[in-house]
Amino acid sequence: MAEKQITRKEFLKGMGTTLAGAAILGTGLLTGCAQETASSAEGIPAHPFKYKKLDPTKAAEYGYNAYFEKGG
Image 1 (cartoon, one colour):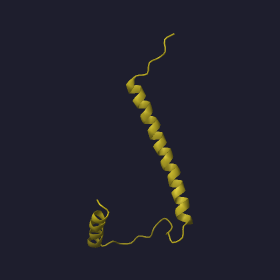
Image 2 (cartoon, one colour):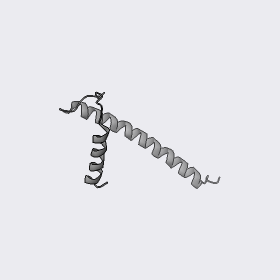
Image 3 (tube, helix red, strand yellow):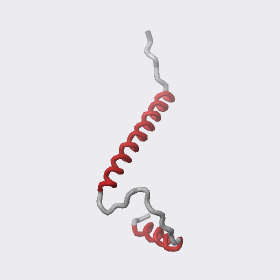
Image 4 (cartoon, one colour):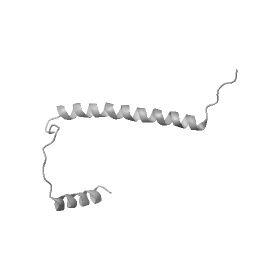
């Protein structure tokens, strides 16, 4: 009996599905680890954060300066 040949399209489709699943699983694992670390660290506020109104001018200046200081 002849072996079934996998097409390039089937291979890429399978790899895409595998990578998407790995990305979702990895994100879930990292999120869980990050939440445990953040809640146990001192000086880090707990989620949900309190709302604080921002001054648009100061926020724009901060963003502009951070862009050029960090190398864009």
